[in-house]
Image (cartoon, rainbow, N blue to C red):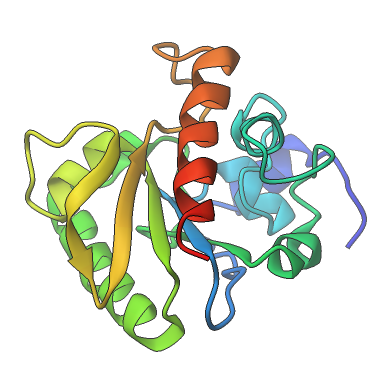
Length: 185
């Protein structure tokens, strides 16, 4: 699919639409967003809104030798990286989700981890992790629990709406994950 900018009508029609995972067996890292935004729903691509910091952080963190785009799914898989979501339902904002959405999402994530066996599940949203996995005091970084052998690493939400973290913060945090993943082989 070629890159395009969705119209207002396309954004409106994207509400509630799922988008496909970028996933395969034995990934190094499976990144997990909260849920697709309208821009992602309209394009069918993860982290598609131009202000989203995911693709830039992925590159600055050392995962890629160039900055990829939401239309680079095959290149991610070649690097043994994947993307999924806690909730695969497009909304305008993550605050439209409720605790039950996160709990169901955590159960689905456990199934995906058991099936695909990534080395690390990197959750992109501290609040999503806290609610979904019932760990209200969790912070960013490596978590003490593992799921079906996969390490759990929590990162901040890279949405452009997240004003608490700057690009340099994301680069540093993604770099820490990259360095950790290199110790796993």
